[in-house]
Image 1: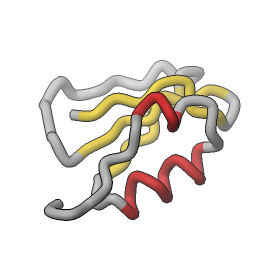
Image 2: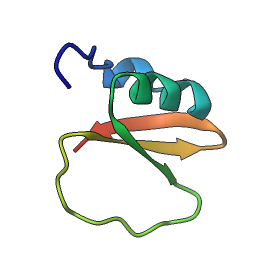
Image 3: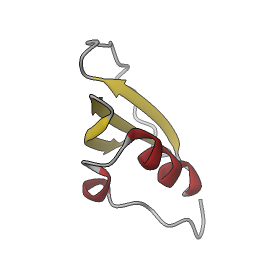
Image 4: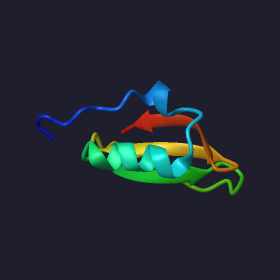
Length: 66
C-alpha cells in the first residue's frame, strides 16, 4: 500500500458502516464488518492489510487494524 492514506481508526468510530467501508477500501484495506448483535466468531490471525469495523445498529462503534 505505498502512498495509501491510512485512515484514523478513531475518526471512523461513530460513522455509518458504508462510509467507513468506502474510506478503508479506498486506502487499500480489506474490510471485515463485525455485527456486535450477532456475536460472530472471529479468527485470531493478524493481517496488517485488514481493518475490522465493529458495528451496532449501522454505526461503527470500534475499528481495529490487523
